[in-house]
Length: 349
Image (cartoon, rainbow, N blue to C red; front, side, top):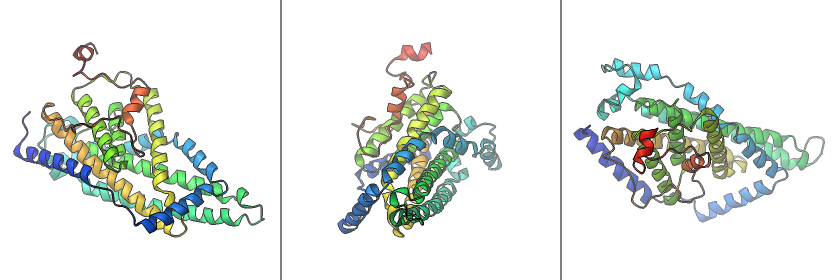
């Protein structure tokens, strides 16, 4: 299908924005402030029992994946979104009908700003609360119990672990819900297994910072978009495999978020850091979802003539905050063959 002048213009803007985001250097705190946070983080990591908190948190995070993602995506309504389009005068009865509309019609109906800021504010509130608990737990752990059993036996330690885990579960749930809501407005069903994989990749892009990580995330999304646009078979992506991938993704998400949130172990300032970082994470993921689905919408509408592929970009690029969904699929032997590379495989499936 040929793109309208509006859609072509938006495609050009998307590519310009993508190129600009790779040139943009992440903001850094002044050296003095970085030094203070680094020292505080070292103290937090070496505090009595801190290793148990982080280890237990990382393990527990594996159980968050499927439960959190499924719960979040089920709270967004397909019927509600379709009704919004119908009220705007579009005669559609399913999500597939949205993809037949011009992008200008989607822009007129979609409430993407509300999705973005609403979820970000909720995340900030959760981050402030968890940071308050973490700060209190840290003080308690440092002072010892009321009975004087010592820091190693401080009951506040379990409270800290529970607060950090609950906060991450909340952030992941809001991230999934934000991406799922965005997907619906572009005509994609977040309840389908392959769409859940795409959602994970979008969240990974939102978590990426720095040129290397963003390049890898963009390349991964491009590969998944091409597979979905060309109807690659996802026969091996059953419920068991999807659950395992989701759990592994949640664990990696938790580890990445933990690294970003070590500032929560700094008394008082940690409350601001926790709220601000949660807001920033969900805001970045919401923005990533908006542009990822927007690009995919146009790629599929062009019949695959557009690709959005970055020159020299590879999904396997290494960076500290890359959550490699493609690699998770490969580990479970669930990555479908690319019809472009093996046309016979696509026909047989």
